[in-house]
Length: 409
Image 1 (cartoon, rainbow, N blue to C red):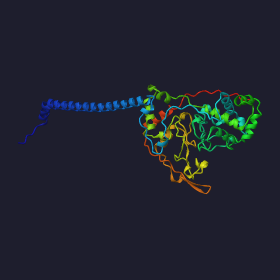
Image 2: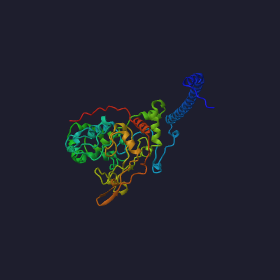
Image 3: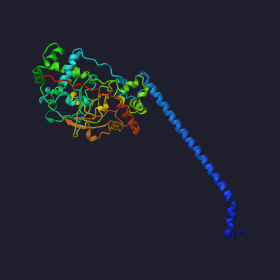
């Protein structure tokens, strides 16, 4: 049966069914609302569960790391290459002075005075402190330092902070002791450019030094050996005071933020920084190749090879300690990186060293730079990089103001 309705009749029918339509629509809206609410509750429950799990994880980490007992810490992630020499991070030990150069406060004062005296240089203008400024983390904050006649050096000036714990000195380890190290910059043509015997002779002619040498060594005699021993004694006293890290691991869990805590954990695990930066000094005191020697390119540096003449040492440099790291930029042997974030990102990417920068011919010998297998892609997230940076900053202690010595006349 074919029914036809007029427009008026259709409107009447619609009005008659409108309550049913509205009722059905409200029902669907209510159902939709309930579904959305249920889904939202499920999501909130999941998010809250994840937050609770994260907080529980952080609470457990905080308890373990601040326990005062490193044996309770989570197991570090170590490369097989580093495991045999690994020493857990922790406090700096006491400084040990060599038997042939024991400590005395008089010798320290003499060494401090010599360290700040520019008359050890040929120009009488450059002191040890010129490149190792106490207000600049005992470095100079330059990519490379200026020396005699404004010559530029070839490497970044390493801080002398905690140098007492280094088993060799300079980026290539060419000095085996601070006594040996202290003479080298005086004689280096690019640095202070003075013959050590002439430098000792100049100091001997300064009457005000007589009493200092007599108190330090028993008589007024000035020798190059005594100069180096005095400076080395002073340098051994330049040691970090306890940092936020030291306070935290000694049982003060509240001093660390969650980011600093996670940074510490990443340092020992996923980021694997601890392979090279371990012990209370935060260095394994070894030489590693991280792919920055630029062999065959401008800025080429043979690294440890220049000292040992062992081919495998080409491109290797001494692993620096990380205490006070936030005060000692720029970083790496050539001062090529200006921020901690930049350094962390560099290691996160595994430093893809380009093939054309891996070899050179030196004195007729072809040398190759073989990057350490411990430098590999880590794929750290932006959050993890920020957390590592936050932790590294806790390794710096309060800057202690040093009183400059009055130079003898």
